[in-house]
Length: 270
Ligand SMILES: [Ca+2]
Ligand SMILES: [Ca+2]
Ligand SMILES: [Ca+2]
Ligand SMILES: [Ca+2]
Image (cartoon, rainbow, N blue to C red; front, side, top):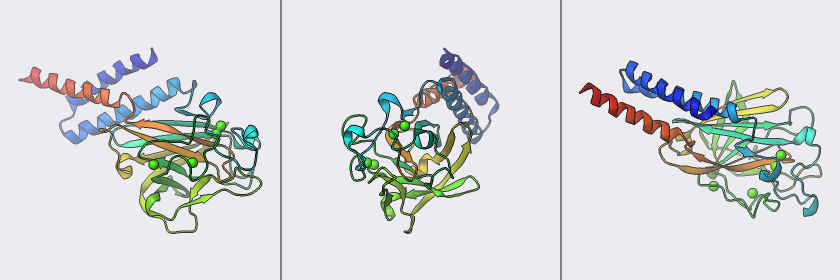
């Protein structure tokens, strides 16, 4: 109900945009604002139910952990109050991909740091069935891009082309899930592909909010593409990994309605 009510509001907003906008640029700007607002409101109205990529219950991604036997390989290795990752909310509009990661993890409580956001632009193929208990580094999906969280400054962080850079830092040690990629290499040159927006807020949960230009990822809102996403802290004691399809369902439909509206308006004018 909330969704359909909202859609009608969006459509009304769109017609207004075309009436008042004289130039294509203004129309696209307005359309984009409306789409972002719509994506955010839909996220808020349904956000309490589940995350887009849910790392709890049946949908969780566990990953291989050679520190423990498979029977004991749980979603969180260590204390859930410190390491639990709940999942990611993902949305996109005509220009950007938006990823919000929700976790109990915060700096200063353990010796570990925030890991990087990994992005696969050619689909998501984990090893085995859910909850992917055997998927280690070298198994499953390979990552084409990453947002280097350690590079963050004034709300901006480097988007890195992983295929052209020098690889990953992988976990090892007694306190960590073993053999999981957590960051792009911190000691090697990185091939920067663009600037990503990154803000980190701490409240009841820690939230890492990423905004990445689709064009920097070689993606387009006009061409549907499944992508893979992954985040963990640098011990990988809980990993969230899963898929999302660009564009967000509804973006193309709204665009279609907009074009229909433009056509109708032209007919009325002539
Ligand atoms: Ca989890
Ligand atoms: Ca890939
Ligand atoms: Ca893997
Ligand atoms: Ca997990």
